[in-house]
Image 1 (spheres, rainbow over the protein chains, first blue to last red):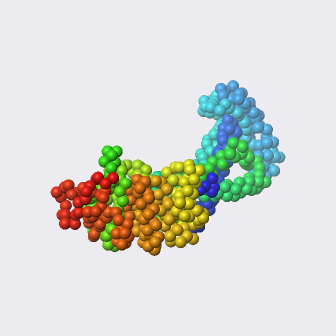
Image 2 (cartoon, chains in turn cyan, orange):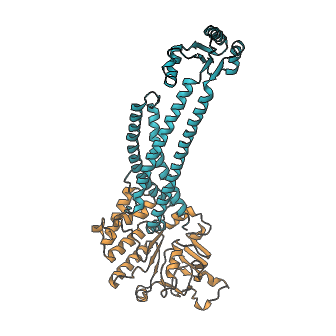
Image 3 (cartoon, rainbow over the protein chains, first blue to last red):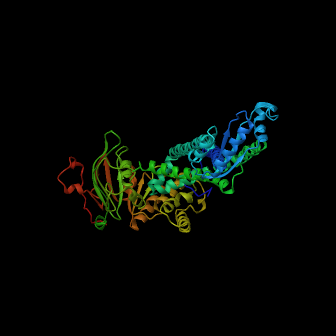
Length: 291
Length: 257
């Protein structure tokens, strides 16, 4: 496939040589963009799965321990009987202290500061938070409900926007590939004008000539795409390795499934297909001007 | 194909040709060629011989007038049907136009490959023809390494490999010696005997006289037919129109082939 019999001269000129390079760069960058897209997608999906079904209820400290205990128990009862609540547990004071310690220092652990009570609530995925909080608000008006979905939605929205951006980059790269191949093919047509004219005059159909250019563009693209992917895979491996070493718990799903890895093969294949089809169409369109 | 049934390979009717906005290089060209006839196309340099041939092998479209090739009106024939017509025309170009990056074999094989023939058929026919034109030992040679005469034989082999119905040659004897030129003419006559219509553009009038055959005479873009040319008819002779009757030599039309 890479060295088909052709009636065209081997192109020793620049237009034949730069195409594989450009395709290699495009495939390399597109692979990185795709990796970013897949990573962000699994990150956002993980967040949505992990946190969307929880909320926190806070009962501010009143200064009176007994009062706080009474309110907390009332809140727990209200929550556990509310529809859509799977689980409602009081967060132990030591954990709250531990959470706050980095900001407030050891004073919290010693119990010198009044701490609010926190109730960790797990709800069914599609529960209506306002509906579910109504009995709670009736019994303990001071309680505030912190629905994680509100800020999570914003975060996920941000990630999705970046994902869209990566998608746009992929689209731009495809456009750049098309432009490059069109240019290279037009140059090839101009350089080999005499050969093409002879082929045309002895009765070659346009597709006969177009096929040769398409095959050549495909060969260039396959070579370039293989190089680009060959560069992208170790680069991605290095990024994953470094990221894992830094903050493994922050990046929950860096290891992609085999199915996701295989989507990387789509990039070079798409580049090669785009190159071949573009070359073919360019030649056909340009030959249509000949009588 | 009704026109072919009347034995006409090619017909021109009031054909005019201009390049861009320039003056007409061919004016009111009207003639038809019988199948299996043999003609020289003569005239001084710049008379329009090459332009006329280019029209005949469909490298150009006429600015006006009607061209009928193998019974098909070229103007109304869809573009995708033209390659099939071109494959029935063999052309020996003035400068041969061999592809210098291909071997003699691949050059001669082009028309067959373009026509979608199987590679083992291609091989057999090309080797056979190259042997026939005396280039058996140069099958793998590239044109730049061949002598002028050898290149010419490659060009002729490429023109005839597809057994064309119409063979056009533009100054094929231009840069070879007389002995070679006569051998070449002999080859064209052999082809003609097999039924191919042959048109050879030349300004070598001595050759025309020695070989015989009729002449299509071009002068400053206008056309005349020699009385002696068998197989040519100037169809305009039957029409009242035309301002250059004085250049016209009506022939015994249509009965030659």
